Length: 128
Ligand SMILES: [Zn+2]
Image 1 (cartoon, rainbow, N blue to C red):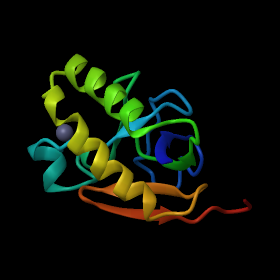
Image 2 (image 1 turned 90 degrees about the vertical axis):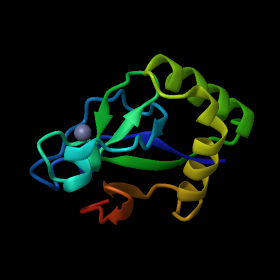
Image 3 (image 1 turned 30 degrees about the vertical axis):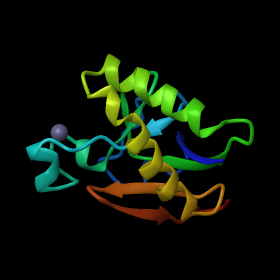
């Protein structure tokens, strides 16, 4: 299945990029705070960030990866544990998993995505 994982690829394409996640860790898209919702380029940065399920840190670049042995149930379990650890409602895990898989399914494997609040765009890779 196609999932979003943390990547350092294309970091620096925007001046306010950041990559605090562990390369390759699973990502989710957390609801932004008021500051992040007002602009993806806000000081907080959560409106342009993907969140790492393990590190609980953020990155502005997500890679669409294919994890063939990973199942929906594995994904929901990982989300449930991470949401609970970060103070989000763990019962939302299956809905969050469904939304994230729908997002990843729209893109080719290898695509690097950026987030602008609730809008996502492909980053063009320079020089492969
Ligand atoms: Zn925020």
